[in-house]
Amino acid sequence: MENLKAEYLKGVYSLLKEIKSDSDEIFHAIRNDPEARGKLFFKVSNWSHWYSLPFVNLCAFAANLSGLTEPLIEAFKDEDLLKARLSFLDKISGHKLEFEKPEESWSEEQTVQLFVQVLFAIHYSLSAIGQRNRSLNCMVDELKSGCEKPEEVIFEAVSIDPSIIANADVALHISRWTLEGNAEYFDRLSRTIKGTYPAKRAQYANDLRIMAQVAEDLEDELTVKTMYEMNQLLNLIVEGEDPYEAIRKHLQTRKKDTRRSKRESSS
Image (cartoon, rainbow, N blue to C red; front, side, top):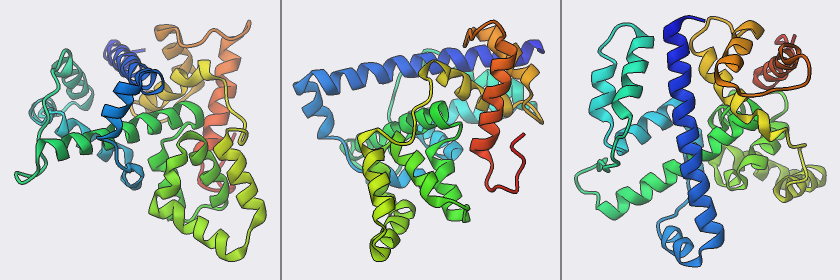
């Protein structure tokens, strides 16, 4: 693996671990500290509409809200995209969060509330990549594009973030189920909300699935060799006596997850 690519993957993985650590701290406080939960809930409002944006746009908006507009612009002046990404990672290292108001008329309270919405949308979308190899934003886009089995996409999405049922593109399908009186889908939806459907995947491979998305952005085609090299570099999983074969199976599952129809190859 090229040195610059290896450096970039290590930088992104370090950032990912930092984000996960912060998320774990927030969710621990929500679930175990009534006072902290009360303070946060005062700032929480529905975030499901953010899933109708492309995931990259959602992340760019979060960067802008976090006061990272200038570092982002400065870094991407470099025509070499990989060097620009490395430069941005370097610039945000140790960045102190300073909210940028999207509009002059917005109050600081409104801006914080907006940031909390975006924060939770990104958290659950990253969780979706970790479990289902694609973001919730991607799943909503599948629904809008007319996928073959929208109900399965919805069950996958709800299994990650039940609040996504408030998203307009998801709610449209649920409304149709209501008109049809589709007891089967509502039974499966109920099991999904309870966490018993669809089957959960191994949590230990979440980082591998997320980093596969990062690696794919650097390659024309994501291969077993690339994923194996990345796994060796970052020590993502140690699986059985043949990790190369294990990664090949993970990649097969990933291709099935990310195809839009049965006509697309899943080999």
